[in-house]
Image 1: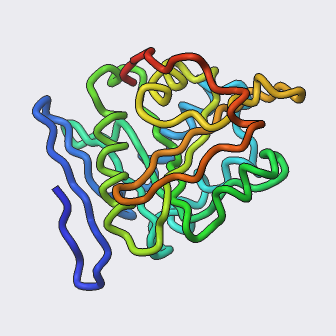
Image 2 (image 1 turned 90 degrees about the vertical axis):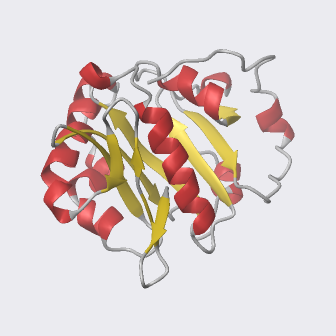
Image 3 (image 1 turned 90 degrees about the horizontal axis):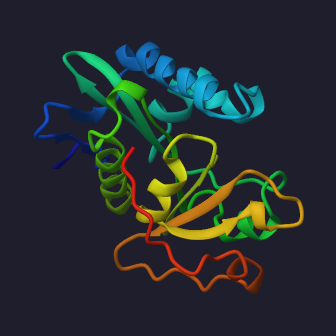
Length: 215
């Protein structure tokens, strides 16, 4: 379900049958959302907290709540925030990402999915999928977005399998000479045809993307 504010900004909300509510975060949710994000970064990711990569976690208002065309969703159960997911209009930068990735997903027209994090005790409840579905609805209804991009750390439990089942693999940097632990994906928006992948990206494509997982 997606409502629209008087300014035309879509405000998605989704009630799940298992009792979870997916809704836009408010300023009252900032502390709880930050806690979910930091716990995930420290417990699930190889890098831990790195200021230049995770500044949006500290400044949630400036990264998600204040800019137009951005949003942060939370999943709530019994009044507790247990999962997060956001959209920002910033494309990936080079460096550290490959130059062709930065060129393919320019800021402004790219809806980047960020911080799709679920607390461990609430995983396998369909929250990641519900967050992504709701964020895709938001991106499709928001003027100016041509495609949806994301990258993931394969060290995060269940993340790589989930995204391989949900999105189109664009580049697995573990297959490149630099062997970075980053995997890039895209999700075409309805009515938008994604550009063909360059040969350098096609070389990293697996024979099948049949693995499925929920997170």
